[in-house]
Amino acid sequence: MYTVIGAPRNRTFRVIWMLEELGEAYDRNLAKQHSPDVLEHSVIGKLPILVDQGHGISDSAAILTYLADKHGRFTAPAGTIDRAKQDAVTFQVLDDLESIIWIATRHGFILPEERRCADLKDSAKWEWARNLQGVEKRFKGPFVMGDDFTLTDILLTHTLSWGMGAKFPVESDVLTDYVKRMSERPAYQRAVESEKGGVAAA
Ligand SMILES: N[C@@H](CCC(=O)N[C@@H](CS)C(=O)NCC(=O)O)C(=O)O
Image 1: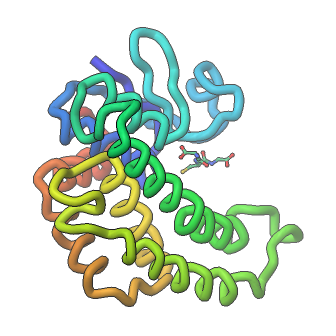
Image 2: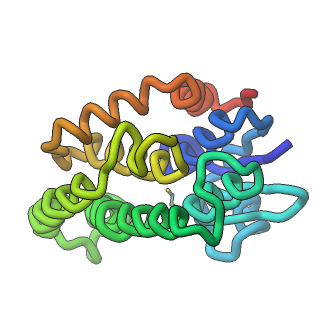
């Protein structure tokens, strides 16, 4: 039984979705960032944390990779060319999309007011739109890496949805259709329900 630490409606969703895809049992601790339960497992205090056998693992992409490798599903095997290509797209999503939306979010309402740059959003939106083109160029379909659903689909779908929610347009029929298809997956829907109730599933 895994434990997922993380209040709802943030990157914790990625971990819940992965566990639902795997059909693995988990319970949830809805602790907030920098709370004692989080700091017990990660000195940087960020969410999410996966606790497995008493060990806390931080960083959503690392957690997804760990779970995929451990269960031998939703990833190309480590040490293969296919895995190197999958990792490259994973880092592209983190570098080119997540970093943009995350900096805009921080400057929107997270940083102390005196540290926020009010005019950053326009530039971030321009860069987001430009970088989406790069993601679309690499998108194979029906999943981002081709025929198989991988952890990179979880990262990409969550990041695109995050952007759409923050009014960062996704002007690509391929990618909007993709997000729609991914969000119709039963495991995604169960993760949404878990987020609403904040209780364990599977
Ligand atoms: N790269 C990390 C980022 C984690 C992160 O920044 N989480 C946010 C919530 S989604 C957080 O805990 N923020 C608190 C902080 O930045 O101190 C991941 O993907 O898990």
